[in-house]
Length: 437
Ligand SMILES: NC(=O)c1ccc[n+]([C@@H]2O[C@H](COP(=O)([O-])OP(=O)(O)OC[C@H]3O[C@@H](n4cnc5c(N)ncnc54)[C@H](OP(=O)(O)O)[C@@H]3O)[C@@H](O)[C@H]2O)c1
Image (spheres, rainbow, N blue to C red):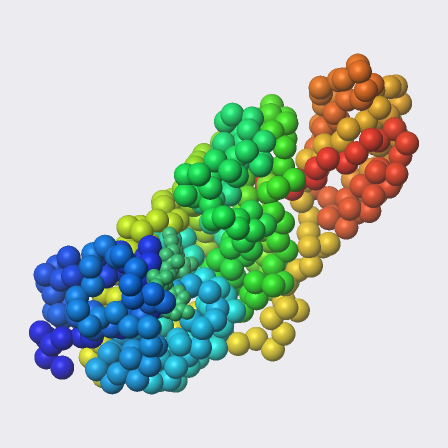
């Protein structure tokens, strides 16, 4: 292929991101030619409904509802999958790679569920499989982990990688808005889907952490073994009390390499010290903090979703492929995700986590309550760091007790908490939130 030859692209999905990619392929064609020496052509775009109004209007003959028009077309060298979901997208990608086509995808679910298998397939076929937009949207974290940070022994990833939950938590913190109201507001603004389960229950973040953690630690981290908690239990008073203690509350996706070779991987709300950069990431923004032995601590901050930001990541992958498409040696070996005999066995169970905790209880407002609770925590090897009594309610004779602990073992805390909940003076255990130091 000479330097000006045409490269044909098959786009699977022409929605929010696919539409942005189609617009960039045509609108930026000259810049793409200058930067890569290639002329790109959108040959086919797979959709469900060809009658739908689309902007920009696709050229005649481009739309199709038949995936075979892309998968069986030998003239299409790059398949760009922007459909989402595991099925049928995952099997289409497998077929595209098997047919020797390069693949770009933004699909976190497919990369989380099938990443290692698809990477091996791409490797054996001598083609690229690039997936920058699958975690972090417009933040170039995947490429960083795959190349620029490759020399590092990565110690940890701490991230805010779901804009919907971060928007809701920001509203709850700033305006003392209850969770249900903040969720409706996010839906009204188009930040949350009508079924918000994947976002608010942490499932979306677990898919993305699976992708990032697997790249960082060079072993598969299946999303289903990542400890995942949502944000629906948080109440406005948690934000108020956390602020008094010097913390923000964020939903974090965390992966940490333990000295014994195991990996902690978890998604849950956490108290983050006010002076940490992650505490300042507000609204729909995302941020990923990576700590490596050589690079130290790096934080990438930006738009984790949205048409333009995600298109930036997808187009970056396409341009990278265009620059190397004729390299006879094929793409360099993928550093990503090696196989592991027992990937689940490498993950540290949440019971074995050591963390500090924030605990909020509603208790009888009477003498001796704290002593009873402190005795149970002490017997469970849990040291109390601070105690504050808040919001006394003379009507019900109750008060809120907010306790923070020094680092303790998760299983000890859960056992002690179950015993605390049984005390006659404890009306309810309202929340237990890990504190990231
Ligand atoms: N939106 C973001 O900000 C963002 C950010 C990062 C990553 N991503 C990822 O990017 C991908 C696309 O997201 P999106 O927001 O652009 O989705 P979207 O707006 O819902 O668009 C999906 C597109 O795929 C087509 N499609 C879906 N299922 C299909 C099927 N079975 N057969 C044929 N066509 C099918 C749809 O066709 P019709 O148009 O005919 O319905 C539509 O054009 C997902 O993997 C998502 O996780 C999105």
